Image (cartoon, rainbow, N blue to C red; front, side):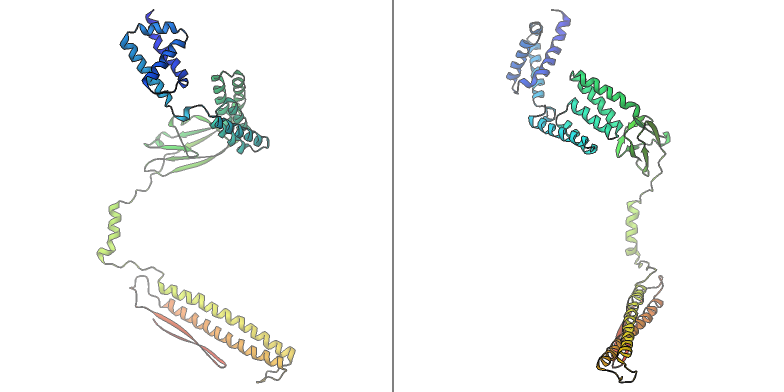
Length: 404
């Protein structure tokens, strides 16, 4: 047995064990040793391998068995994510594939592509990748289509599927001349420590600065952030045709320095320590009250007075024109005219009261606003304004009392 064959044997054993590890579940050392022995017996050139192992000596054989056992144990405990798809996974993937193809035939490319992506995640196959790449191309996502055709070609070639590998390579070659590319240039002075450039919120590796990256047509957002700098962003619209667009990231502006915590604490304690009252607002509470009285109460009173005043005139006109009422007191007319005349007197009194209240509120509001202290003056004592309506037979008025 040559030295070259002796060195090659352990490598051949480990390769074979890795390929057949799923056939032998178990974790004990004895089980692993049995697996190891089985592999030696069943592997091509098994007799040569056995002789090579026996030539290593007892200690080296023992170490080889332990190492092989450790390898098989690690493979048997591999995460579920690395295992083959289950029957349920394949069934679900088949349903998603069929639904995706049906949506694509209806021209619903975006949801159809999503179905195919989900199918590929459950049961990865070169055929699904080809269908997904075709969907991307139909949807105008040329960069995604080109990359997926390339992935399909690699997967098919690895699986020995020459037909799909050749088709995927052909389709990728057809899409490549149609690619839209984006170049993101970053000025040397802009490459500060901690700089991060993002395209559509995804960080861009610095090695790609200045490279023509294939991108899907549409709007892309470019952002640049760095510690102590203002965020910079720009939008670029990529046309659905072959070509190249360039975005240049300028040096970022310095962000405002944050206020020191000690300074904020001193500012918060300043009024309490000095006993100084905070500055009064230029628009005092008294002015606010005056504005409410002036704008709200007075306008409401005047509006009510106007409404009832118009109603009074209409009633008087109807009594005079349709019922022959005179302007005497009491008027001379029929019973319906007398009733209209009485109603007109009532609405006239209400109108007078409303007008009086509105006028009084207007005067009060003006007084309150004009007598309000300036913003530098100390807060005066509490002020009070009260309005009382005064209504009598045939009379109406308003009583105003207050302190200023």
